[in-house]
Length: 591
Image (tube, rainbow, N blue to C red; front, top):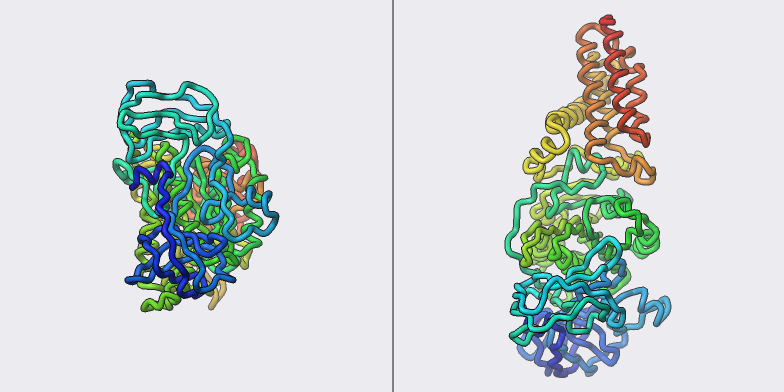
C-alpha cells in the first residue's frame, strides 16, 4: 500500500453515516474504515481522521468546524491516511495544518476560508526546469536523487526516489521544463518517479543511520551559543509564561540559525501573533543569502480559534516537511509554537472520547505523543547516502509559568536543552529572558571539543568562569538584601560588578539592533573573554591593595559595554584589551 500511497493513487471509497457529534469528535456507523485513515464528513466534505474503531462504530476527529453537521449526514473514506505533498514549491509557502495553501485559498474565497475547501499543497501547473543526474541503465536506490530543480536561486531541490522504490532506469526525461505531475523516470519494475511524492504525516521517513549530534546549531544568541548550546539534530524546549518572549526568541532563531531550511509551526497561538509572523516573515531579509527569508522558510499557521484537532495535524505536517528536506542532505530547523496548545487539544479530544484522564486531565498517552514528535529530530545518514539533520525547538506555554505542570515535565524528559524563560527578567526588559540558573544543555559535553578546536582552546575555561560568577552572585543576593552591597568585602563587591557586566553586556541582546541581534561565535567568545579578563586583572589588583572604585572607573570597562554595538567589533575589542592591560599596570605602579 505504501508504494501506491507515495504515488498518490489510492482511492478506495466507501460510505457511512454520522451517528453522534461531540465537538470535533464525530462517530460514524456502517463504514469500513481503517485506523488513521482520512475521511470526508458531511455534505461539505470536512477533513477528518479515524482515531478509534469500536466494533460497528468509527470515531473520527474532524480538522474543521463541525457546526451544522447532523446525525445521518454522509461520511466517505478515502483509502489513505492524512498525507502531504512533498516537492518543489514548498519553500516560501504558507499552509494550514492539513497543508492547504492559505494565500491561494484567500484569493479564491477572500478572508474567510469555506469549510471543506481543498487545494493541492504544491502547484500542479507550474513548470520547473529539471536537471537529470541519472541516465538510462543506471540503478536507482531507495531515496536516491535522480535529478534536481532550482527551487529558488539558493536552494537545489533534489528529486528523490520514494523510500520504497528502487530499480533500473529504462527511461528518464532530458533537461527541460516539466510540471510536478509529469513522469520523469520509469523503472524496469514498472514503478515511476514524478517530481513530487505523497507521504503519510504520522509515519517517520526512513534513513540508514542516526548519528550522535556533535556540531552546534549556531543561533547568534550569546546566552544560547555559549552557555546553553543546542546541537544540530538536537531537541530544545522553551517554556515560559505569557509575555516572556517565546515567539520573538523562536522568530530570531528561525532568522539566524545556520540551517538551510526553516519550518515554523504556529500551533494554536493567538491570531495576532500569527498575523505578525505571516506579515513580518515575508519582509525579512535572509542574513546569509541577502534574499527574502521566506525563500528558505515554510510557514504552517494554526491559530487558537481554529478547530483543536487541526493542531495535531499541523505538528505532524511540519515535521514531515522537515524530514523531506533532511533527506536531501540539508540541515533543517523546526520551530513549534507551542506544544502546550497541542497538548490542550489532546486533552479536549480525550475528554470527548470519555478516556480515563491522567494528571491535570491530560490523556495517559501525553508523554508518548510528545516523544514520537521529538524523536523524529536527529542528524542522520539518509537513504541516498547524504548527511542531513532536523533540529526541533518547541515552545511550551505553562499556565502561570508553572514549570511543574505535565506538559513541561514530560517535555523535559525528552528534550536535552532547556531554555527557561523568566517573567521577572522580561519585566525588567532583560531579553532574551532566559534564566541562566534554571536553564541547561546536555549537549555541551559533546560540543566542547568542537568549540575548543574551531573557536578557542580557552572556550570551556572562559565559559566555566562566567557560570561560576553568575552562581556566586545568586548566593550573595540574600546577604546583599539584608545588609547591602557596601557591607561586603572588596572582592565580593567586585564579583557583583563583574556579574552585572556579564548579565547586561553579554547575556542581554537587542533583537532589533542591526549589529547586536547576531554575533558570530568568535565575536561572542571575544566579548565574554574581555569581561573575564577584566575580572582576573581586577581581582589581582584588589589583592594588591587597589581600591575597587578606581577599578570600576577604568575607561576599558566602559568601552566593553559599548563594543557589542560596533560594526568594527574585531579591531575595537583588540584595542580595548590593550587599553585594559595598560590601565591595570598603571594602577599597580608597573609603568
